[in-house]
View 1 (cartoon, rainbow, N blue to C red):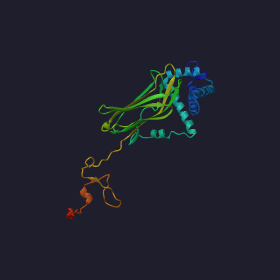
View 2: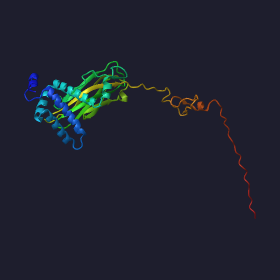
View 3: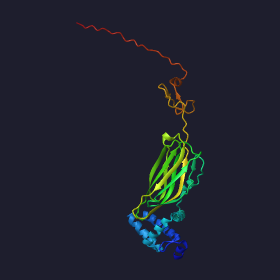
View 4: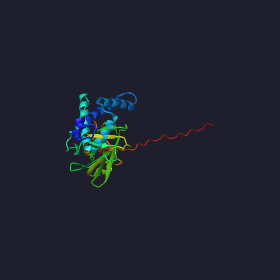
Length: 305
């Protein structure tokens, strides 16, 4: 640890990047185990984390000092967490857990009815301070976007918090060519995959998208450390399916009815064609007569005297 610290130019008492990576891996493993244990979650978390620190011979004070230092070097800390995530992913795959859905999104091309239009970095680090607690992005639309496109922003999260809070908030916002704005917000809680879905409102379905923007932020903590790692970020764009309308839709007259379709006959389907009463009766003329029924004469009954 001493030689590694000197080579990286970090102060005494601060964990090296490699040591920090090892501690964070075991921290998140301990957190996952605490979630599965019966009883009080906070107590289980405290016991499992202390066990992980003892495994590496690191005290809580050393961990806190190291976190403060590495958070000031956000780019390096981001690289550390990226390696942590890769190692956790390999461990998950070794026990049969796969990120099939996220991998499918990542393998999508940038064109087609369903495409991954994310062109930015796929990972980021948020810190619970007033400067680094928000991640923002903007994606400019191009000619491959269609009116009424729907979106899904997908990512995975890893929380590291000294005060036990695992809450974040995500916002996905769409700006249209007429300067209108629509969006959706969502609370993000816990570790794992998350999806923020946006469905184009009916009143904006005729406009093209100018750009897509969004953010994720975590609340600022009061002196305690907290961070959030965002990984595998993708933006999936879906073209809306075309809606086919019959030319007679909305023109149903009072004297028309829907004709059911009989198997093997040429009668039109009720879902597509509306028939008038004459079409239903056919060409046969209908005989119209008035039947007059004669009443029987009234018989006068004479009263006998």
